[in-house]
Image (cartoon, rainbow, N blue to C red):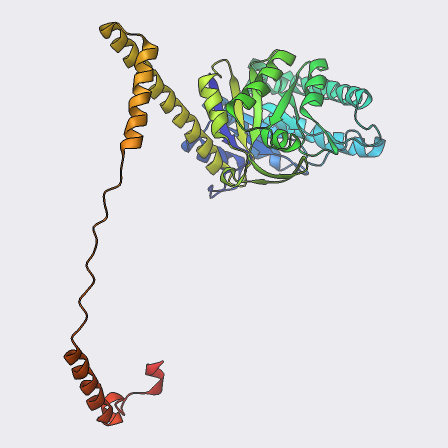
Length: 382
């Protein structure tokens, strides 16, 4: 089992805002990957820090990834599609420079195509061209190999097609899998928050996660998964916005449980899209560690039962049943300690009350100057 965790972008806690400074902080946190965000226009001056990040990723065995433009119109008219492809071209160039392993791309609205085979075929044709283009860029100029050693020794970036979180956007899980099946070099990017939202809150148990990963594995025959995760607020099958994990109905403890218990075959990268970025990436890492601890405890109990069964000649099932019965009896037998009755405080004697009244009466007779000395200012009283 291989699990890599990291944030989408420079960590919030990073004092600097460059990608290299972000990588330093991510490595210090014990995380192993990040996804650089090129979601808008890429300026030429950005390529210097991209190259520095690529060199660091190559030396530190750090998995670098990159995200293309958020707003995409690959199913739009010729002009809007050309505008989107121009932005994607800049992302492909940056991916080569930064040594990205995965490039995440959106498709956009269904447009005039609507849902169905025609739209899927159009998307498959476009992404086939994008895969060809990234291969051309990767092997464009062999003279640059000394500057980009990862190009010579590595393989081109994989083109990731992300699942969308809204009904009007192309990118349901089924649509993405169908296109990936027809485009060699493309992979599905499983945005778990989007899948949860489009499925009206479908990701609830470890079995749900198991069905998701098994479905993808059986459909495209892969053990490598690239995923985004975050809390999400959703309505009527549409993602409204990302939230931190603890404020969402999307629970990731079952995902951690699945990864530890049944995901030994997985090679998975998990990118945090949460507003808390690296904090929720660390929280997810804690969930995985907690699941591992529970697994070790369960195995230790099973080993102890087997050893006891061998000594006593009873079955493991009988020992387990006896332990469960004893635990149930302990729970039922736990009674609260009786609360001690507190005696009511004795009422003060009537004579004392009379004495208090006399003291009060005597105080009333005292002049006001003794209560409020004349040398005090009014401001000190309030």
